[in-house]
Length: 158
Image (cartoon, rainbow, N blue to C red):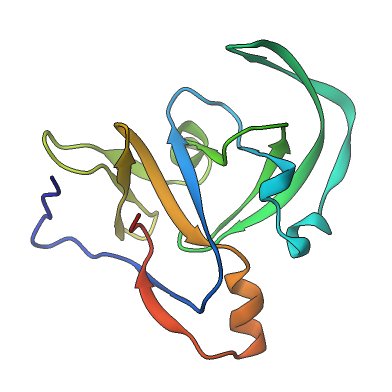
C-alpha cells in the first residue's frame, strides 16, 4: 500500500534504456557496498585499492575487502565511494546520507518511506520484503552527456 502526501514533490530523472540498479537503504550500515558484478564499465575505471584491507563483519563471519569504486547515484545527486565486496547487494548507508549528505528520512505508518533531499525534494522509496529500496539508472550520466534520446521515469519506482 502506498499513501502519497498531497504536497509531496516526487523527483524525476531522465533515463533511456539503461539498466536500473536497486540499492538497499540501510539504517544499520555505516558504509556503502556493491559487488564487483554490479559495477558498470564506466564505474570500473574509478576502482582503486585501499591502503589496508577493510574488515567487514557479516552474518557469515569476517570478510576482507581491499577495493573501492566511485558511484554516481543519479536521482540522489550524490557521488559515493562504495566498498567492493563479493556477493554484496548494492547498499547505501542511511546514516551517511542523513549525517554527511544532508538528507532526511521518514516513514509514516502504512506508507512507503520517504527520503528528503537537502533541497527539500521528497523521494518516495519502495519496499521489498519490508526493506527500503531506491532504484536509479546505471550509466545515466554517460547517456545525458552523449545527448541520446531519453524518457522521464520516476526515480524510486520498483
